[in-house]
Every structure is written in C-alpha cells, then in structure tokens.
Image (cartoon, one colour):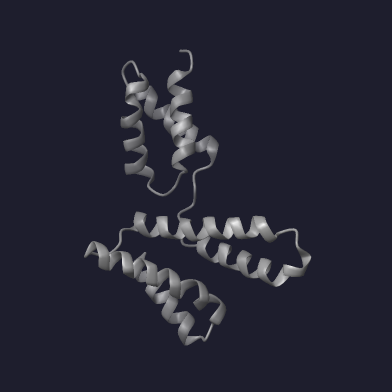
Length: 149
C-alpha cells in the first residue's frame, strides 16, 4: 500500500495533477511520519486507519456544507477527495455478509457464550482486516451470541 501511495503521488506530480496531489501528498506525508515514529514501514492497517481518518473529516465537512449552494466548489472538491481516498480502502463487507461470517464462525464453536466474543473479533481481524466496521461487528457478535438458540 505504501508503494502504491508513493507511485500514485509521483504520477500526480509528473502529470501536474494539482487536485490529486492536494490529497495524496498530505496523506503520504502522514504515512511516512507514522513510519518514522514506528521506525518501520506503516502496515496496511495503519495506512487504512489514516485514510479512514481523512474520510471521516471529509464526511463531517460534507455534512456541514452539503445544503449550501454557494459552496458548490467546496462540495465538489470534498466529494472528489472522498472518492479518491475510498479507492485506497479494501472493499467493505456488506452488513448481511458480515453477519453471515460471524454466524458461520459461531456455529463452529462449542457452546458459544458471550465470553467467546474475543475469539470471534480476533478471527474477524485476522481474516477480514480493514474490510468491516469494528463497531458494527461488535454489535452483531453480541446480537448473535445473545440470540435464543
């Protein structure tokens, strides 16, 4: 992922694509700063977390200005940035698919209880890193574990 970000940033610079550079240069800078702090290359999950942070900020911006017609240029820029950043994230599991994955794993457990939540979340993290919303997964696990048998 780090190599892809570097290559895409370089390509944007070579093409003088200022719109793309305005998104990728600060992103790459944050990733490289994290790598320097950790004294190793940032992991994909760490890069995804930085991208999600950027997207969350854009979501807030869009929510604040989306109904203000006088700010259409800002809305268009924020939408462009949001779409560009989302291209770097893995495709997310749908809610239905996430529930199915959890149900399948729970079915493999002997006498599943709420104490198995850690096992289930560890499984999701190892097999589906970055492909699901952790808070949704947590609530689905609780829901499935507490459902009457």
